[in-house]
Length: 213
Ligand code: HEM
Image 1 (tube, rainbow, N blue to C red):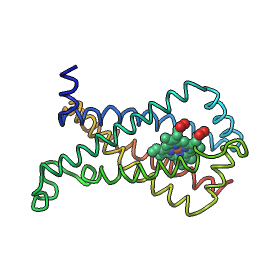
Image 2: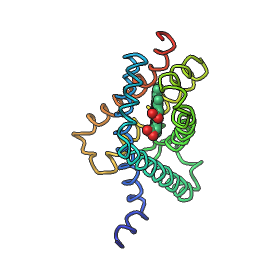
Image 3: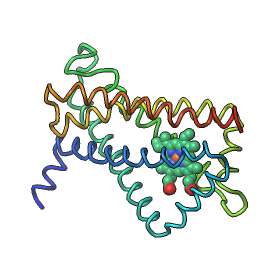
Image 4: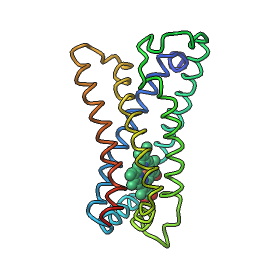
């Protein structure tokens, strides 16, 4: 138990928590994207997918609670690391911008993370915490994406998510020690592909609804 508290309290322990919760989000995003692809099958396909999901009852509640816990842990740990790094490097302004292996991807992680938090709150208020007794999921989604402001906000948010996940995925492998020179090109390519799948897979859905519904 003592070692667990010590590990969690250490910087590497926190990074491992970020990596594991981050991998869990990748799993959620893959499932969410697969479900959202039902939009291409039309309104009825989206509604029957949503009905099927809700019929899972306690299972879906368990998944939602787990996701929320992972989300909170990821954000709190990320912020702790961010402020810890700030305190440890008060001279950061005089350092070379890319010193210590810092890239635009790594330096922007806290900011893209906070933007994603804002997006998820906005997203849940619009699509999840709404009255689903008087309207179906397809009515909610299709009506939101008839508004160019929503579409622009969503496409921009998907690019931010793609950027965050793409860097996070690569970084998580570094954290868990899979950073052998032999595997890094594959991990880098996979991270870029994941970013593209998120940006195009999620980002094209609102545009498709506007153009073809
Ligand atoms: C065009 C892109 C997206 C569409 C059309 C979409 C659609 C939806 C819909 C319709 C729901 C409500 C499901 C229900 O309550 O029955 C939902 C829930 C949710 N979405 Fe999205 N989503 C998109 C992108 C994203 C992204 C990028 C994220 C994460 C960064 C995300 C996170 C969530 C979460 C956490 C829930 C709640 C899950 C649950 O409690 O069941 N969504 N989404």
